[in-house]
Amino acid sequence: MNTAPPTALETRDPALREAALMAKLPAQVRAAQAVPALAERLAGIDAGSVTTRMALAQLPVTRKHELLERQQATRGVDAFGGFAAIGWSTQQALRPARRVYQSPGPIYEPEGHAADYWRSARALHAAGFSAGDLVHNSFSYHLTPGAWLMESGLHGLGCTVFPGGTGNTELQLQAMQHLRPDGYCGTPSFLRILLEKAQDSGVALPSLRKALVSGEAFPPSLRDWLQARGVVAYQAFATADVGVIAFETAAREGLIVDEGVIVEIVRPGTGDAVPDGEVGEIVVTVLNADYPLVRFGTGDLSAVLPGLCPTGRSNLRIKGWLGRADQTAKVRGMFVHASQVAEVLRRHPGLKRARLVVEGEMANDRMTLQVESDQSAAGLADAVAGTVREVTKLRADVVLLAPGALPNDGKVIEDARRYE
Image (cartoon, rainbow, N blue to C red; front, top):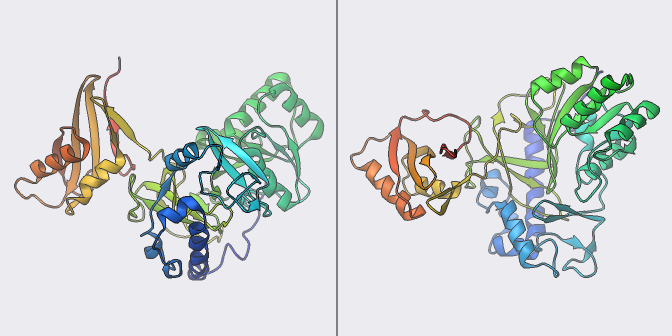
């Protein structure tokens, strides 16, 4: 199967793209300031001055737990916690939403009326989907936005959708046999289940040749397993809050950031950018006035991949999903967060990266802060240990390491305790 070539928008000069994105930032900040929750967070900010990444980086990061906390505080008054500009008649919003979804938490997300609201069409196009295709969509149509996220993009491309949803493997396989779909959208693991069931049942699926998968890790081993059975699958990285963030291309070299998204990679627990190539948390600003999340921390880890995509797409590339950034550990009855490790680093400007290692047996914990430093000043380790105790209310040993000694994996807290 040949994937589709990039569009002119995707191959434009990176400087032109950056200028276009930055020109739209002030309007996005103003939209954020017009909703109650973000008006509080962005009070005093001159939206017209937010026209560079440096200016954007000065704004606070909003993380998922804050969405949940605000929503819990406004139950029955504003389902979206004051973060959305759309809703329905009994909500604190002026414009109607098309749909409302529930994700685990529960966290509620709105969908507006824009075509391809979740921006999945570009990812589908890159995976080879085109007008006239019949697509078997096995993302859930129940509560969560996954199925609708894909369906809106498929309709934007002119595809026909079979709403398979989740479960009912035998019925879904029967529909595939009868309808002969060209492609599949869903999780990669369920696609494997379907193909294994087809093989065990002696059912041929010769029409199924392409897939866009998401919602879970997609290792090369599974990609190759699918391709050996005639299905060329690509992955998209998306969240229920902001939609598609990045997607895979035929080059199989990382994921291309979507054209309507501004991505930053920050040190976990902070809003501070890390150098290109270093693993950190993906922070997203989507140009969407309906749900104007500015600097939304996804909680997912990745890193910038240098260079341009061989397909000709010129946007930023990231390495794909590399784990979770929202790291915590409970030590002697106290929660320790990545943001607290970041606060220790802030108070000692000469320090670089750090990792807090928790060891021992439960109820007999010990903490060691491994920290990179190009200084060897007498008493530095003791001073840092004092700061750890002040910030976390817990004691820790401090080990100073040379710059670059810690693994580049984004891990800030490592729980190495034995739980047997």
